[in-house]
Image (cartoon, rainbow, N blue to C red):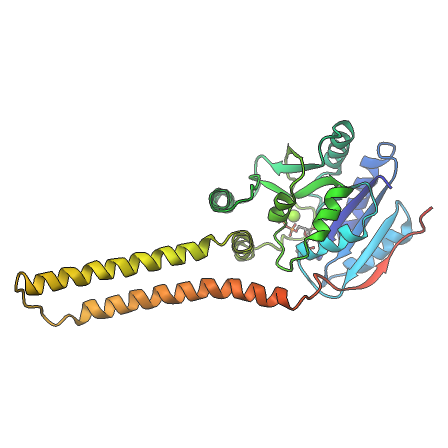
Length: 313
Ligand code: UDP
Ligand code: MG
């Protein structure tokens, strides 16, 4: 098997058939052998039925994984990579925003450049709102500054890599998955190509601004302990300032003989400030401990209830 295309699907009943057609059209006669590995990530619509119909129709080899509930795109991709048999593995969205023709370019690049292990596509111009785009840019800048890993700005999960990379990705078994970080962390020689995302064919994106923010925070907390350092830094600064303030008060009272009015407002303000800082610090530490707690349970990344494959040979 030359190429496995892993496609996570969440409520994509109308997209999966056109996507398969687009793949068959792009790959026929150009890629020796390929398979499509669809992962149904607990869709609430009829995606699973649509996928089974595709498999029945037999347009091309299709593997289907049905997760027992919605585990999120990251877990769905993991499940798909685990079932992928190809020498090359591609991660592709189900909504036709990413063209199979670009997959072909990726495959050709890997064929012609044996020293590269992976080809990732990044969006040159985003079609999303300006504000979201601005926030994403800021996120990449911040990550770049505070993390040891290097994230390529605009690079999505849309990529094709060799089997060796797929095995490395499977070795990373953390539950809180932030794939952009994982791709960078496992290393390997990666080539970046620009692409233009198309409009979503059917349905709507499931990534609300809030979900994206959570995802970004997850990325930061998974890949750096920098927030803990901020907590320690601000805490130390506050402690130092309060020491200086106390000294100033002592000097004013005994050296300058100044009489102080009752200072309730100052005291209350300081208590609130310090209390707030302590709570923030505890919150940050709590986030890290929660991760240790959840990972410590050693739960699987996903649970599949069905797996349908095809006759190989
Ligand atoms: N997806 C998934 N599980 C989820 C959310 C999304 O498998 O919980 C899939 C979705 O079906 C699509 C891909 O991940 O194939 C990208 O999702 P979407 O198009 O909503 O994201 P966007 O393109 O807006 O970043
Ligand atoms: Mg999309």
